[in-house]
Image 1 (cartoon, rainbow, N blue to C red):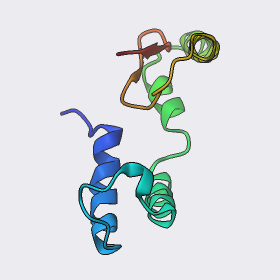
Image 2: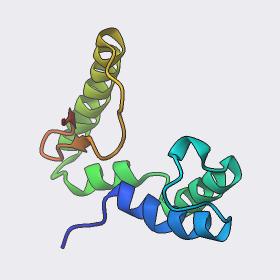
Image 3: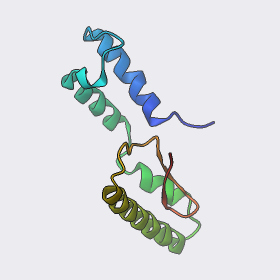
Image 4: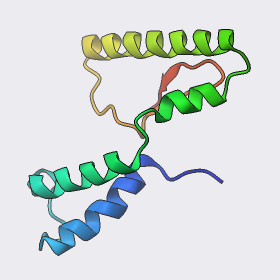
Length: 111
């Protein structure tokens, strides 16, 4: 099956933490306590392998040359899209609207 989306993982952790902190359910995200946000971020970071993307790219490769090509394509596409996004004022960049094409290694922006 497919894995959970990053936002689902985040909300599965943050909602009980907010409830435990006494934050009403409809409170604006801007008003969420920073301590709770930091705690959830630390939990998610501890559960996620630091080299997750590298592992996934590696597993999609058939040869060292393929790995090198995909690594270069990934770095290039990420750099280009970061610069283009900055110049044209793209906001709202998060893991739910960026994908990695493991056939090429490129980062693809959606929505």
